[in-house]
Image: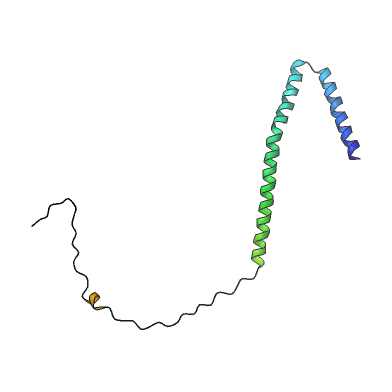
Amino acid sequence: MKRTLWWGAVAFGAALGLIAGLRLDGRSLAVVIGVLCGLAAALPMTGTALFFWWRERGERLRVQERLVELQHRPTPAPPVIVVQGGRSLEPLPPSRLLGTRQREFTVVGQEEEE
């Protein structure tokens, strides 16, 4: 059935092309051929665009399914954290009790003042 339909479409196209070729003048035939060549030139880009659109759509559907699966998954229990009591606060070492002394800076290349 498909093969008969295919051959019928090919025969119809060939007959239509033959009749149009015989009845049209040169300029009209040039326009028809230009349109057909333009459509034929657009087919690879159209096919590429449809391929990428189809691939992106499939990826989007997979991501949606994954999100739905993750939303229906039960949430895990929170982790148990045990904090042990530490030692008591130790006093500061003697060097820190007095504080820090004033810092002195030396600028390289500057003469010393007296």
